[in-house]
Image 1: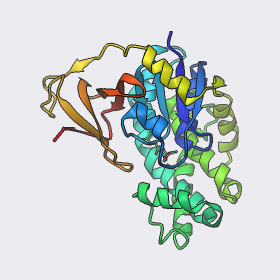
Image 2: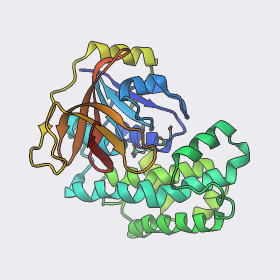
Image 3: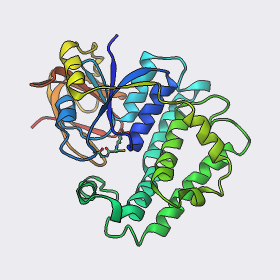
Length: 306
Ligand SMILES: N[C@@H](CCC(=O)N[C@@H](CS)C(=O)NCC(=O)O)C(=O)O
């Protein structure tokens, strides 16, 4: 079976989501460290330009975005399930809440309270990248960001108030990973986080339970090793293109796929999969050979290449 390579860096909150998913599924994986800022040539050789963190590579298949990484891990490793108790839709829907409403105030507080200590190159990169963050107002907005963070943290606290172990009941689910990662980031990066979050007394024990999912079995690998694994592998069979899809595209057409939020770098290639769950492109690269790059359909714009 092809090895799993996670391209990420340790401080990345979205990568923490992916690491917990690998832990949840009790998987062994190889960790390839990528830079926090552009350029990321070893990553983009695989992705064709997608720059966000993390990316999961399985042989010649490259999975972008934690929303799709979760579904692919669930497909390949159904047990233990991310969706106990029939909460498949709800657990996934929570990403739209935690990736934006919960993550953004935490990220704003982390940037706003640490700006002096953050290297200028990182600030400049994120100014160009995080189009949801108003860098000119960050310090002035700290109070607002604090309230917005607490408003969301309180929802988790309310959900846990009946003494349940996890957000959706007795068993952990993907919902817990979505709810946890903004708190992980905030506690790690905002000096006052523990006191800001102190009123929410059900959170710490739940956070400890989510943390205990662990990261699976991690080893360190080089980008060269990951690239060699891509070259040696053949991509999995594509799902095909839904002829009824509103995009009106056919398999084999040249298309671009672009995130519709931030980091809007288009990736071009030959369309192999298109349905409501996923869009995938085949691309040739001088370094990694023929790879298929997979994105969730949710949050991505698919267009015929000009
Ligand atoms: N929708 C993406 C969002 C990923 C994301 O925004 N990751 C942040 C890091 S935590 C990022 O890419 N930052 C810029 C970078 O790493 O270059 C996902 O779920 O994977």
